[in-house]
Each structure stands twice: as structure tokens, then as C-alpha cells.
Length: 167
Image 1 (spheres, one colour):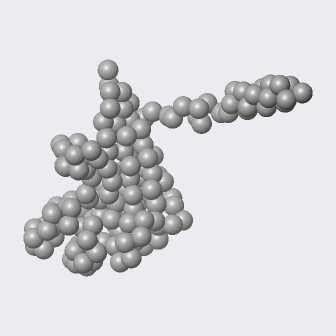
Image 2: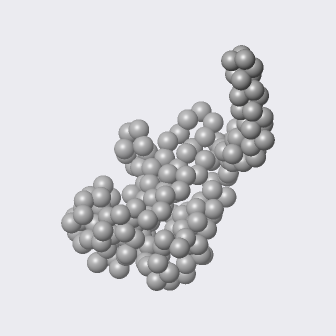
């Protein structure tokens, strides 16, 4: 009898796994443009992001070394472009971000300190920081994007994008 119950449970588990949609079984892979466009759609359409909030895209680092690789600037520039399409007039220009960082004599890493983050927000006219990290493995680049409220430091939205590396 115990054996019969075990086989029934295993059968039910197997059937439920087979019935999962393909999107749940395997993560969808994007090109860089598709992935960042999808992220911009999520951020632009989120009810957690105030419609009148100004966004500053800054602070992307490679997650294992915690350093800025050339891909960091590419991610910031491309995500800024896609967000500007979704939220015109609500995204702080990168040259303004760089000017404010120089003026405050802080680095991108310093933005995660509440005092520096608030000073940056006031000078850059930003309400929210869009930042994140990424890691690179043999087949993929996985990007984690987080939207943080500058005043409170609370994460309002987080999104992961998996990019298939070109062969």
C-alpha cells in the first residue's frame, strides 16, 4: 500500500512538471537590446514607480569583482536610451550624472551611501536610482536591475534579464 502511494505521488509530480509552460521550464534568452527594452517596459509600466519620478541610470558593476567593466557603461547608456523612449523628460542625462559625481567628488560606488545618494539626487534632480549588477558565464550574461528610491533607500522594483552570448 505504501509503495502504491509513493508511485502515485511520483506520477502526479512527474505529470505536473510536464505540464508546466515552456516559459517556466526554461528562462527566455534575449539579445541585449531586447532584454534592456523589456526591462525599460517593466520599469516604465510599473505601478511601484511614480509617474513623475526622475530616473538616474548609474552604478552597474560586474557582480563577482564588484568593478566597472566596459559592459557597465554599455548597459547604463543603452538602458538610459530605452527608458528615455518610455519616459521622455524623466531620465537624467548621463553627462549630467558625470558632472554631478565630479562636483560632489564621489564615485558611483558612493551612491549607495545614504548621505551621498541624497546629495546626488538633489543636484542631479533624480528621485530614483536605476542600478544593478551582472555576471558573465559561458553562455549568458545575467543582468539584475534594481530601482531604488533616493530618499528612503528602498528598492521599488527588481528585474532580471538573461542575455545569450553570441556564438
